[in-house]
Image (cartoon, rainbow, N blue to C red; front, top):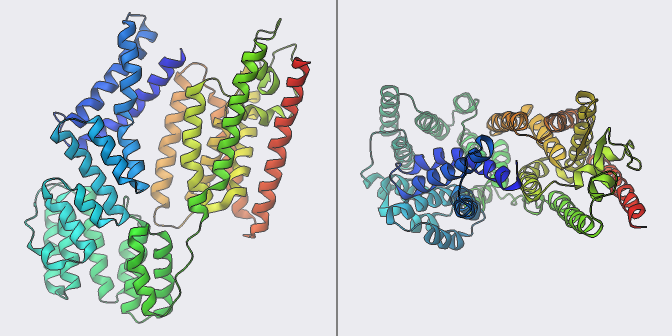
Amino acid sequence: MTQDVLFLLVVVIAGLYGLRWTLRLSPLSNELPLKTLVATALSALVVGSALFSYQLSDSLRLLTLIFAPLYVFALLVLTTLARSRRYGLASFLTRILYWTQEGREALQRLLAQVALRQGDVDQALEFIPQRDPLMLAQAYALKQQWPELLALELPSRGDNAFLGGAAQVEALIALGRFEDAEVKIATLRRRWQDEGQGPIGYRSIVLSEARLAAERGDIATVRDLLQEPLIGVAPHLLFGIVARAAEQAEQPEQAQELYSRAYEASPVGFREVYAGALRRYGRALPEVSRRQVAASGTLSLLAAILVSYLGQLFLDRLLGPIPFIGIDPSTAAGAFLLNIPGVPESNMLWRYLSYAFLHGNLVHIGFNSWVLFDIGRIFESRRGWGNLLAAFTFGTAMGAYLTTVAQAGDQLALVGASGGVLGVAGALLAEAWRGSAPGDRQLTRSLVQWMVLIVLFSTFVPNVSLWGHVGGVVGGLLWGFLRQGLPGDRRIDLVAGVVSIALLTYAVARALAVVLRYML
């Protein structure tokens, strides 16, 4: 399977997920899901030509390689830009990629949803297409414009309609109309039972009941309602509701602590709400952890992998394949090797780590870099750079070790950072598995589903290391659970990071020493 076909296989998988996403925003006849469907189908057609040996024109292949990734990954790129609060660039790309009013409005609806979750209400109002009443209700709730919210004519059918009902309940509670709020919640619950009990309706009703109980200072009821994770609800909202319950129950210390946690967990657009609550108590605003933004360990590791790949390309082009062995010099220098004779130091332990800094092609390193950037920042924000590097090191080593056990009689050269990246994912899974934060249950499900997909991908796609991936997850889980059993002293994290840097640096240095042998 060529590099182009392998890349388009990734596009097909991403396209199937993207199509489900776009169909939630608009019907299939809309430009948004239609272009995603066409891009996915063309990619599948090219992949099928490699598997079933039918012919396609070179122009169709080239057209697919250029345009299919644009329309499959467009939603991911635009959502990422919006979450980074680069709304202007997201809006500009929307106009470039989509040409009909209906297609642009579907994407503007998505950007408005992201802006609302970020607390950027004014920006959301600019995106909301045709003054959509459901989105206006959510925006008015964030701006606390209660009369305007209650004056809206909201839809009463469909799972999304419960968002408007929940906003109305919030308005009634804010205006002190508790009995009206109770009647509204009862109406929403009856409608939810009659309409199929959708997930959005469920969490809307639970949040509404929790808000009403919080306003009455009923902490026990609030905790009972929120003890099960609500998928899709931001943790800061849950902290804020419980904090309000403690405040109304005249438990100031608990309220202050919970408002502080809400402030720390919230996007920038929401912080002023929690800051106002903290100022009422005369409490200083907590410092938001900078490592969530900086992610220095993730970025440094990513830079090392990218620089190593550039060096690999230079070395292989400079020296060419090694005579009598038939492999590239970078592979001979640093790959994890099994049963390949004639390579210096082919059985050395440092190869259990050095192979992570070599990659097969652009698709290989691109996918690993993307996942490391995404998952690495999440894990580093929870555990710091030292644990990130330790999880990467454990995952890399265990990926090579399980490959040795499972494929002892095979002849192979293992390269790629995927074992280490999955080590980080495994450590994050261990963290979320035993975590108590509101979003941990959802994070656990997402990681498990993603890992199952990786295993299936590794099983059915040639030249992808199943045991390297499985070993990476096992190594990350081992480190994750081991770290939880150790004291919470940050010096342990520092030592783990320094030792990991030393081991990785030593492995790369030994690989460079082998390179010098070929050059001299």
